[in-house]
Figure 1 (cartoon, helix red, strand yellow):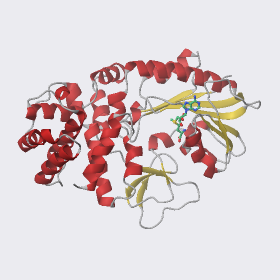
Figure 2 (spheres, helix red, strand yellow):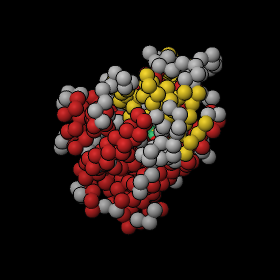
Figure 3 (cartoon, helix red, strand yellow):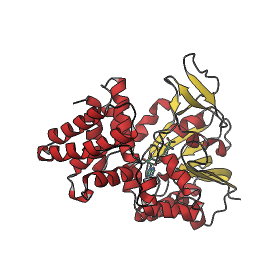
Figure 4 (cartoon, helix red, strand yellow):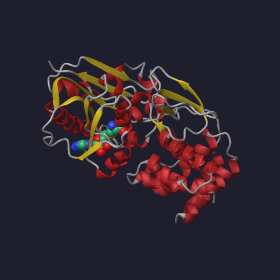
Amino acid sequence: MSPARLLAFEILRKVGRGGYASDLLLSGSATLHSRDAALASEIVFGVLRYQAQLDFLVEHYSLRAIRKLDFEVLLALRMGVYQLRYLDRVPPHAAVSESVELVKTTGFRSAAGFANAVLRKVGRDPVAWPDRSTELSHPAWMLERWDREFGPDITPLIARANLLAPEIYFRVPPGAAIPAGLSAEPTGTSGCYRLISGEPTGFRIQDIGSQAVVPLLDLSPGLRFLDLCAAPGNKTAQALESGVRAVACDFHAKRLAMLRPLGVDVVHLDATRPLPFRAVFDRILLDAPCSGTGTLARNPEIKWRLTPADIDELHHRQVVLLQNAVTALAPGGILVYSTCSLEREENDGVIAALGLEPARTMRRVPGLQPGDGFFAAVISPR
Ligand SMILES: C[S@@+](CC[C@H](N)C(=O)[O-])C[C@H]1O[C@@H](n2cnc3c(N)ncnc32)[C@H](O)[C@@H]1O
């Protein structure tokens, strides 16, 4: 059994119980050869991105409803079909035999013959997808929301961008140089480079959409800067490049500890409660917890987990967070509210709920701009 496929299977099983693929891959592949780690990652993300297409294909070849299959058998079949139809470098016999082996070794020996028969039928002939949700491999309710928000011509562009592996961007702080051996190109966002090849060791990997938020704060040396939802610290680190005096906060103590190397003051707090500061801040960033629907290429499991009710619940939490954040802003100060969500309720809807008038908004949409989807509103109450 190849370690890459075994790891991919275990990770997909844990994702099915609520885990996050990228975290699990990071920890699970630490001891693997880089080639195996790359295959595990390719299979995990591919299966999650194309899950609706794969489930249709499993039903198409097996003539059985997927709801009648044990979850582990379904996972092994999704993995097998993905390798057979979507990857070019995997020999078909390996894709079939390793998937059948997975079925056997994970306790479903009696389904091994069935899995073998199904996978042997898988070809590469085009199929007619039964509906748009299957073709774009996104839940129908999510596509319908994007139709209303962006228009039905834009929705497929977003969904197709979410099916691709994201490009890698990293941050080059002022004065730092890109070492020989690393091939990268600058982007329109200052200090943000797109990786072409090589390992950006020592640089902070940070999506271009995320790097576009901090410049909206108009930072300069000496300003008092509050980062209310700061962990793991990407935007705090970027803000520090401007010489601000930063206080970084987060609800999750473990994640907040990741900011220690930055040498900033850290405060462990719940920003839905009244804030504990006596002083006010010249600049505040509220990079709010959100649904993450702008990051589905990177976190494809979110699209299968999220419900419309979650978005309503997030909206209410974000309104309270913003209401509290505004109380800590100095007169004439600037507050930036941001999310990596595409959903109106989490973006303009939060600003509108408090009757605030943004001086400016930024919107990045996958498929229209490079990188993750982001929203940011610049608030500077008079
Ligand atoms: C989008 S992430 C922040 C990313 C971070 N700004 C960066 O660029 O690295 C949102 C953060 O909000 C934190 N969070 C969630 N609920 C919170 C609350 N009630 N108070 C403070 N932080 C909270 C989460 O732990 C998470 O780290």
